[in-house]
Structure formats: structure tokens, C-alpha cells
Length: 309
Image 1 (cartoon, rainbow, N blue to C red):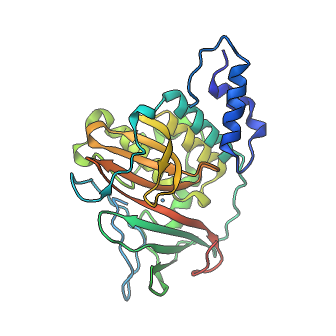
Image 2: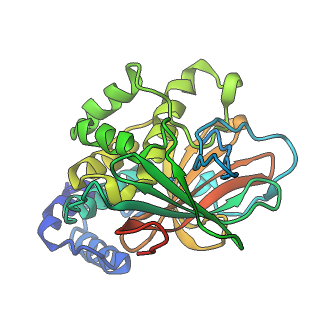
Image 3: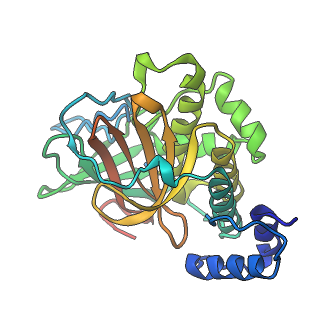
């Protein structure tokens, strides 16, 4: 019998750079109708501590683990229902995301260009939307907080240094199994938000770390080589406790596809992907009926600090 993954591989040559997902679903439905012996099944970018620039200091989106409190945060949105999760659906959607990523064109990025990122913050308090620019040679950064002027200064030297990030992603394995081994075998934990923290049970702690680290890198989408991005999507499909859910929304209410790590009583961590091209739209963590997270409102490569894509 032909399963969903085989169908997607047959469709490899038909995948456009910015596909219409509904069209793909129609093709899959048509294929299943022509196979009557098949049983029908449903087809289915910080321990967040943002250090804002002051007079002589600028650090953009510093990495740190945030453990959700029992209260606080925004009300949970009804988009992370575990009842909607199907392992075959996760494999199908993430394989298609990998095919789309693999067919994209690798960006030619000069050292004098800047990586641009605009994010909104929903961390249980009123926090400003901000824009950051990191020069690709890793030497300069700029920050503009909502309602304020652009501030330029020396770059942050830690994990958010974009030159360091670029070097890391270019060195990552492009085989999904090798990528999982790399992240499990001592690679630095880059989890953007944690629903487990120190209390994470041993049986899921390693998977939570790998899931979080892949999401950290996906936020730097314009910098990631196509074959590496494809490997990341395929690796996500191999992690236990991961499901894909349609009808998800990011913390700004934008609809997308949710890639969810379910940590049981410790909550859920969800990356929201654009339903058209699987671009990373943001992250949110849900626990005890409360949500926190951040949304990527824009990203790309520009020529000068202050420019937008």
C-alpha cells in the first residue's frame, strides 16, 4: 500500500516554492479515492530574557529558559488539542515542509549585510514589539523598540550572534538521524521557551531539548541552507511526543500549522509555521490554561541597519 510519505515523494517534482497546501490535500484525497483497498484515514526565532539597548549596551534577544508559572500570561487559545494529533499526519506535513525547504534557493549573503528580525513579545506583561539587525560579520547590532529610535552598537557575543549562528547551521548534518544525534550528544541547548525546566522528567527531557534547539534555529530561517532546513523538519517528525495540528494560531492570532511537543502535565510547546511555505511564525508555550510566547512579524537579509525586507 502507498502511504502518505510515498505519495509526497512521488510529488517531489511538483512542489512549488510557495505551495498551496489545500491543493496538495486535494491531490492526496484524489490518490486515496483511487486506492479502494486502503482504509480511509484523515490526512492529516531565549530562556526569553530580552535585554534592550541602553546608552552604551545593546544585546538583542538573549537566550534563557523560561519556565511557565501556574498563573499569569495570556489566556490559552484552543489550538493545541492533543485529540487532533496523528503521528502519520505529523510525518506527512513535516515531510512536505522538508520538500518545500529543499527546493528553495540558497541565499547568497555578504558579510556586510544584516540579518533583520521583528518580534512581538507576549510574556505575561505588556512588552514592546522590537526590531533587531545583526551584521552578518558578527561585529555590529542595532535595535529599534516600538516607538523609539534606532540604536546601533557592538554585537552580542553569545548564542544570538548571527555570524556564530550562521557558522553553526552551515556545519550541521543534513541527514535527519545524524542531526538528532548531534543535538543529543552534547550540543548546546538553545531552547527558546521551556515547559519543563529543571522538573522535566528524564524520559522526555532529551526530546524536549532537541525539539527546543531545532526551533531556536528555525527562527533564523533566512540564514539556514535549504538542505539543513529540510533535515530539521524531518528530524522534528522523528521526535517522540511531537504532533502536527492544523488550525493553530500564534500569539498574535495569525493562523498557521502547529508543530507541538506535548510534555503532558508540564504543558505544551508549539512552533507555528506558515501554512503556505512553512516559514517559522513564532513560538508559544501553554501550561495550566495560560500561554506565553513570541511571534516573528518579519525577517530577512537587508543591506543596512534600519532597512526592512
